[in-house]
Amino acid sequence: MTYLGSKRLANFKKSRTDPIIKPHANSERYKDRPGMSESHLQLIRKMPCAICLRTPGGECHHLKSAPGRGMGIRTEDKWGVPLCRTDHDIVERAGTKNEISLFKDAGIDCHLLANDLWAATGNLPQMIKILMAHRWHGKK
Ligand SMILES: [Zn+2]
Image (cartoon, rainbow, N blue to C red):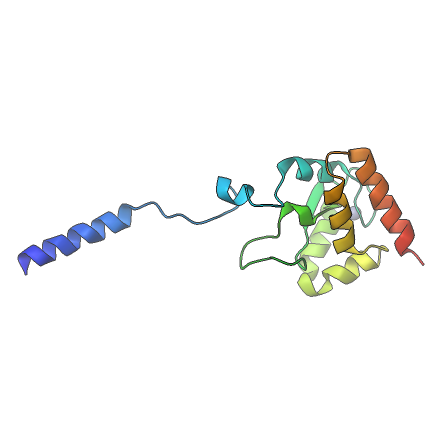
């Protein structure tokens, strides 16, 4: 009993000091997922707000209603759309269910916009043109 007991205690101690590996926002593993790009986020933040057109919007909203969103893990950067602080707060508070309609009110299909911005990433003037085209196209 004493031998087994001390061995169990040793194993317990070892497992307590093992590093805990889990993906989170700051880990390299998380950032290296496909569809992730810090440079894309930087460009998105320089764009006008998709809802009110304040320039620059200054923030990137990761669409909650996009596919691939896991528990506690936001969607990939490719699902980022430009927003200002005020509209970002409104969209975040409205939640996943109301996200699509909030963008629709500004004439925007948010998933199509994110998709087109990701396709043009690296070219800020082109990304801004795409945003404006989405707004004109959506207004009926
Ligand atoms: Zn705004």
